[in-house]
Length: 200
Image (cartoon, rainbow, N blue to C red; front, top):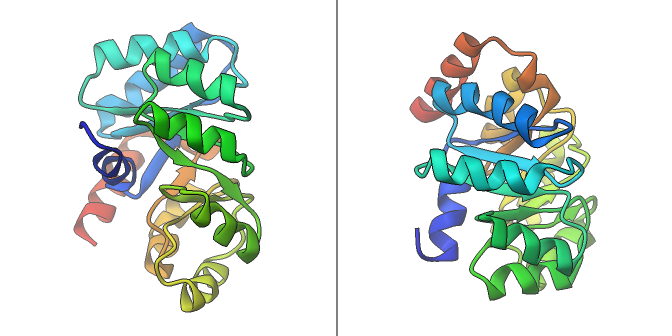
């Protein structure tokens, strides 16, 4: 993947971005590997984990076919550090234009956060590759927004359970960020979810 649009396509390809939220590099890798082995191809490691950058480096080296990104990227310095560690995409709960600029400067896709229609528009105007809708509202909200912004690539995140993903995708979301609920989901169910999203 050499271009941002290719990275963005890969990030949303399965309809699921697995968010691995742990407290150090070792636990992040340990949590991520079973998901990758189950077939998940897009992982986000939030920078709230002080070992996230080291985990990103290791996962990029050991799983070159996966798309590994950094989450909770709140400022330009964090964006640059994440990209240098190997992050291919950056996710934030808020909209900070300097994060988008820094990510794009170094070839990373950027998914800033938005909580309203106005913020979705502002994110798109600032160059967002997709928009993290946080916290996730309802599938009907996504439908309503897409009725007036049919070109908006929305990624609901926060409180999304794996079993709910098909409903969000049917509503028009391009993918869902799934975190703690995914960690509690048996691997067989994750594999089934991947099969369903691919076949739909």
